[in-house]
Picture (cartoon, rainbow, N blue to C red):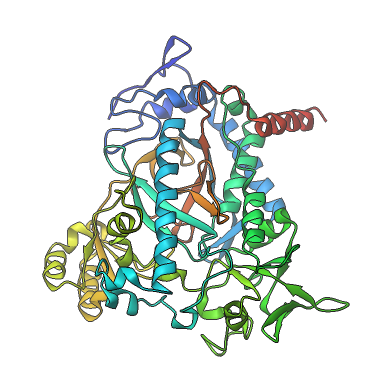
Length: 521
């Protein structure tokens, strides 16, 4: 614990003591010594990337910070940007203190995640066609055969431009030494990108002064980049493909994102009942005549997308859509069956998978992972269960997670029984001391654990990573679970431009001007 923080801003060394009831009084009690902190080093000195941000907060009083938080919440309510937590509909939980990534850090992240998606794309194409990696014994055939998300119904054919991962979300964390690690891959229906864009818009409206002294890379290209990738994936011979976003409906927790992306891309938002398959072609019902659909950006899980191949009673998907894809009449993005590659047991083989296909070492390492289908490893893990994290291999959203040091005796006993009953269904990992970031907790600034989900878009010719991505923050004190479904929130994530770059953040400037005009009206 540090007694105070000295902030070097513009060559002026300022002490946080004696400034009155400002945010910096609470920074003086901020403990950055327990793990890697995004804003402060281990001695409590602000990192250079954050100096201008902390300067803005330096004289900000708590009531003003609360007022701006109310403006943020009202803006989110007005736009319907909410989520359901414990049965209550709340504004999307955005912490107003941004998370900053330097240009050098982003260069490392971008190289690592695009390398990973490239290898995963090759892996998926292989296991659904030739299976060379299985024949060569790089990954045991039974690992794939027993994966819940490996679907034989889509075996033997490839999409028109050989892209299965049109958009990926790669979850990253920082360890105690500040090194980025891959926590998991999301290759089915990765969510959260709408909040990346809305977080930027809200932060620039509520705190326009933060953007005046920083050159921040824009995130606004995402909808067009995604649309371009979807168009590029259309069946061969289609010049002006019709693209739609397929949603489960208004009751889905990510429905806001579905409507947001459809609106931003300028395409139709449809439900399963709006589509029909005839002669292996997909059509959209309209008030006049049916219109052929060429590309479906689906936000429905595999099990519900086609009742002829998966759950027979599903009313969310479209009967016959898998056959239409097999005959090359429609593209489903992301491809059905991608979950075989983001299975958490398969994740443990990613270093070998990258080396097999690309002849390279991973540019960003995995978290150390114990494969519990090995009897000796399982015995070791269960003997040390109070020190490890246990994860179901096919779960998401933080569900089923058992964090040993925070678990009760009953929970530890139960996870032992679950693992013994289904060793293939779980992995174990050491507890990663996630990095922290200053977060407003209603009384002041305190450290909260964060992760990062950057998004990669693949159009078949090149990959593009959204600068930054979604920073999720565990809002309850001491929590390591960042998922919004488990009480987590988010932050606007900035990637700074190179110092040599003369490019300016025109979007941020526009937002500031709009904000100032509104204040004058």
